[in-house]
Amino acid sequence: MCCSSGVCGPGIDPMLLRVSADLSWLGKQGLTVERVNLGQEPMRFVETPEVRELLDRDGEDALPVVFIRGEVFAAGRYPNRMELAGALGLSL
Image 1 (cartoon, helix red, strand yellow):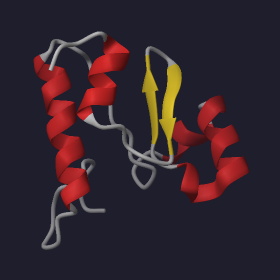
Image 2 (tube, rainbow, N blue to C red; image 1 turned 90 degrees about the vertical axis):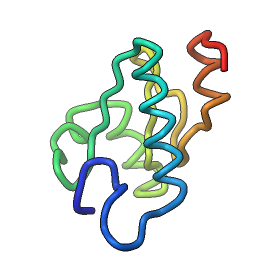
Image 3 (cartoon, rainbow, N blue to C red; image 1 turned 60 degrees about the vertical axis):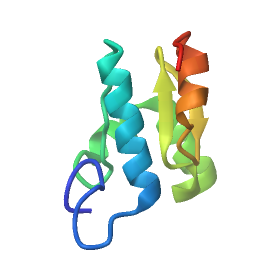
Image 4 (cartoon, rainbow, N blue to C red; image 1 turned 180 degrees about the vertical axis):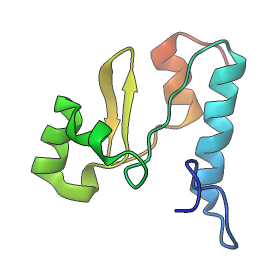
């Protein structure tokens, strides 16, 4: 992956484009969003017990892992905007 968002290069994945838009929307709602890329920051994955446990159990199928308020919210998929809004008490 050439950039942290995955929304780059000649073949942009539509799902990653949606995720990027959803994360941007969360930022516009005043929330802090942090995105970590395994290829760029592997130690962050190893040093996070919940992520390490998921990776040990499910391998790469555990990715992505989405945390909300310090707790695992989703693993193995990106939640959609409606799920994110519901979990965070936001209106669409």
